[in-house]
Length: 310
Picture 1 (cartoon, one colour):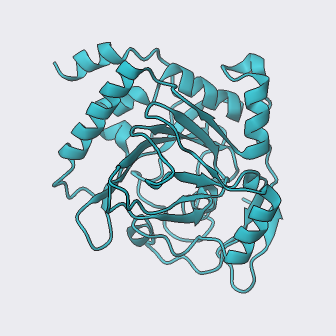
Picture 2: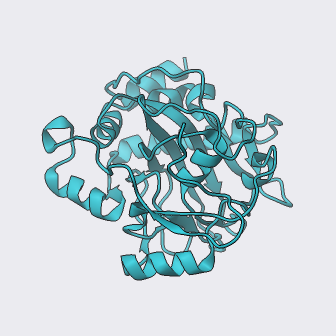
Picture 3: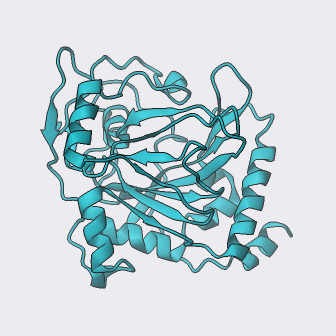
C-alpha cells in the first residue's frame, strides 16, 4: 500500500497537505450534529460539547472512574501504564474490553452516531483508555498528532478516525487540560527519528519519537492563530480529529484531571502493516482482530449501574 504520509525520516522534516477529507460525505441529516457544529469541526479539527451528560450521570461516571482506578491500583497487566519514576497510574488501556461499564459506555447511541456522521461510515473502537492525571503528580503529554503514531506504528492508512474524550473530572486551565492547535488537522507534520521495536513500552510513559519539531509547531500556531484549551465541567465531551495537533501540561494543581477516550475508526480504514516497518503494537493499544461495527445503543446510566453491581 502506498504511504500517503511518510514520517520518522532522517534529515529535515516537511509539512504535507492533508490528502483525506475531514468530514466524509456527511450532512446534518446524517446524524445528531447540525451544520454549525459540522462547520466548526471541519475548520478547527475538534468540537467541544459542554454538559453532554447530566449531573446524575456524571456522579455515576465518577464512581466508575474511581472503581476502575482502585481495581487497577496493584495490577501488573501491560494495559495499565504508570508514570515514569513513580507508581501513579498514567493510563488504563482497552477499557471497552476489560471493563463492563466502559464497554457499555463505548456504544452510547449519540456518541457513536456522531462518530459515524463525522467519518461517513460505520465505526469500530480502534483504541480506548482512561487517562489519570492526579493532582500534584500528573505528568504532561507533549505535542503530537495521534494519526502520525497510529499511521507509523499501527498501520492506520488514512485520516479517517476521531477521538471522543469524555471529561470525568472538571477540567480547568490549571490542572493540565487538553490543548489543541485549531486548523492543524489540515497538515501532516513529518517527524524525525527511526522507530525502535517495542517503542510503545517507553512512548506510553513519555513520547520522544513521533513528536514534531519546534519549527513545525510554530508554523502550525501561526496558521491557526491560537491554542485552544478543552476546559469545562465533568460530563462534557470533546471530539477531535485524528490528525489534530494536541498535548497537555503537567498538573501541579491539587485538582485531578481524568478523561476516558474512545477512538472510533471507520470500518473502511482498517489497520494494515505499520508504515514504520516494525512489528504491530499489542492489541490493547491498536485493535486488529475485534473489528465489528458498533451498534449504537441507548445508554440508561441507572439501569447500567444496577446491572453492573448485581
